[in-house]
Image (spheres, each protein chain N blue to C red):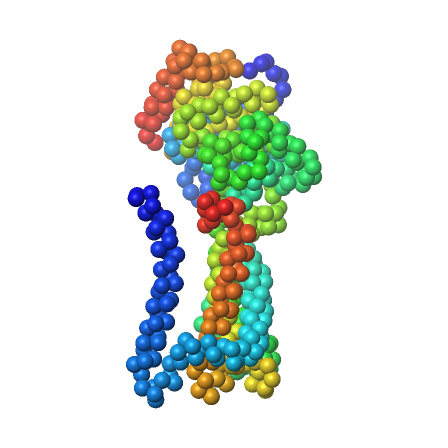
Length: 258
Length: 269
């Protein structure tokens, strides 16, 4: 976004990934994310989009190449949070305790935890649902709690793996807008995986289009629509044009056969 | 009319079980009437059973307490040990593979044959009854709890790993709570088995040296004296004991699960 001489917050160089003796999932993946980037990974099923998030988070190790996250090896970074496809809330804990959980696991004292949990829930507009259990919430509300939980560790890097895939379109659009609002306030770097071109264009400043078998970065699209983006953004010609462009790229990628 | 229908149905549903009970008692008396005087002692009337209840009340009461105590001890022991063993078994497939065959062997061995061995080892009475109860309850509880501990949602495990949770945190903050529904399923099976185990145990290893026995011991005495009414009363007390155990477990599982688990729907509270 702004000219920044500081080193990239996340950098992958010629990263390969395979599970055990299995086929190559990712081949020579290289990209660098600047602080404040909102990067969306989009591509056909099985292209390894989610795998890239897992490599950045350190949940899975890389097979070859180099990866640096916030100046450290992946997996040793604290200020990093993951939002999964499912809300992955603990059903026996109420909303507050769910949001507090990452801090609890890191040994943050209880008094401090609840204050941060309350603020995170305010950000996602669920401060009035603190005592509810997950099953009393709608799908969209559960996802909001999941996002609040991610925010509770004050992340510098936020990894989102198709978080809104299971929601209806209206809820998804609204959560997209809310996510950008929160980003405006908290300035993290985001990596977002989705199948939705519209969502990718709306959220990101950079879109990485991937091809499959093995997963590679096929091309990058810069989205120069100004932030803050609102409902109006979706109606603009520039937005529509980008949606068409990314859709075409995606279709050309899907036609590629190994 | 159509508004009244559901509530009428509800009342009918409430009444039906009682009506069935009354019908069966009437049938019982009818059978009794149809029998000649030599057959009659085989099937005591409900009235005779009720009289036996009163006459044998003190004996039944103290026997029920003894058997209930043995059942509770054996059940409690089974709960505690099955939980600990399930935790160990959940650690790795290797551990499970090395222990499961022996658990199966333990489960397949007939208790009736083990009982005399136990009597020789620890003597008759409460100790034997407790161990026999334990042996009967143990297996289904271990299996259920272990299954629960290894069935944790993969995504939640990933989330815990991502948060750099320790192994201990993963077990006690994630695996154990998410295994609770399985644990209570095992507990419920155990609760139906515990009184039966205690009565069987008492029947074989009850206080054969005289003094205080349980329901199993009473059964031996009443059957040797052909006290049919008292035998029916003993069966009823055993049944009641089973109900108390199961009800206790149902209450416990409600307390632990009703706020979050789907087995207790929100309409319940």
